[in-house]
Amino acid sequence: GRVEGVIYTVDPVTKLPGIGKKTGEALNKCGIETTSDLKELLDNTDKTNAVMEKMPVNNKGKKQISTAVLEKLIKKVNDLDLCDEAIPADIDYTRADNPFKERYGDEWEDRIRQHSALRGSVPVTDMIKHIWSETHKHFKGGAFE
Image (cartoon, rainbow, N blue to C red; front, side, top):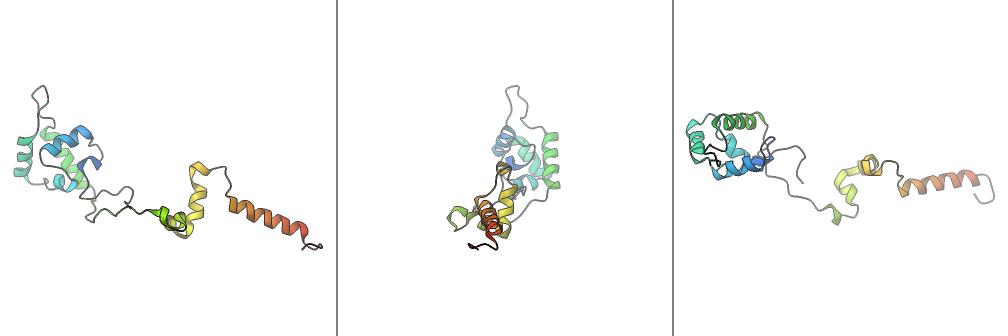
């Protein structure tokens, strides 16, 4: 699935840090829908001016995004390392024989143990191993070994 922290060129502008719903909607109304659309404005005064001409105004008659703010957003997106690849499809791990191993590989047991929701808990498999080990020690050398 999607790699955490990676911003793709096809992502909506609202995936960028600092761009919320209202700013995203204002940009969308100007034809800027994806992160790559915003990045294309870099060093392109004509396109930037065209975006500003389409910029919606608020109830006070001012542009919802000023030219200065738009330039900051363009610089911000240019400073990011956007991924040009397609967003990976989500994988349904629940269909695998062992969903945890499918998702985390051979380190799946360690990953589960480290999960905050399971701190202070012991997996059943560890309890069974412990019981088996202690039982073996107890009966070692006896008639039931």
